[in-house]
Length: 275
Image (cartoon, rainbow, N blue to C red):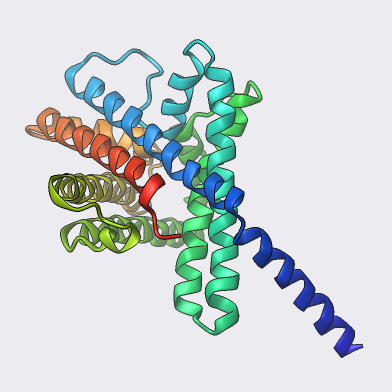
């Protein structure tokens, strides 16, 4: 029985490895980086619109807002599904990479990190699917509803606080990765002036995204401390909070430009990623 079970597992791993190493699947995964880049460029544009007062009601500077902006363009419905498919394929590719490339070889820490990235990209695909099906996604409202539920109990407050710390930590990870240029390990860096431009885009982009994520985490921590769900929000609310700070509009413009830079770097990564 044990031998038969081992044989089945071996065959499943072999089949998964065949799919993972296929050219078409790698191409689909690279498309995921490209559409992620598109979303971040649009998020950056929306953030700048918020900072300059040029945004319209409902124009949220977050992934859902970017996807809605795509859906509102001619032919946008098709592109929304392309975004969803690209992100889903990238998430699945990374999940298989986590298992086949790391976990089965005993590289638990690296495997879990790659698996976490897979979950993050998979989560980005969810609003694309929802909007593609004609649904409505309000990220800030969802965060407030979850926060309102959690603050009803002491354990929930602790969970919310820990979640905020985790998001701040993820933001810090992005900042450090940008400052130390560790993102260059993820790509085959072009030579010459193009390579320098890509390095600048990655550095600025990772730092800006890290700051934006850290702002979300800080608001979650404030919610846990004050036990006020109204303080909680997603990325759009966090960026709008930045705009309320002294010189916040200028800072938000810089963050918006940074998100655009990150999106452009993702475009380069789509072609030159080390997969």
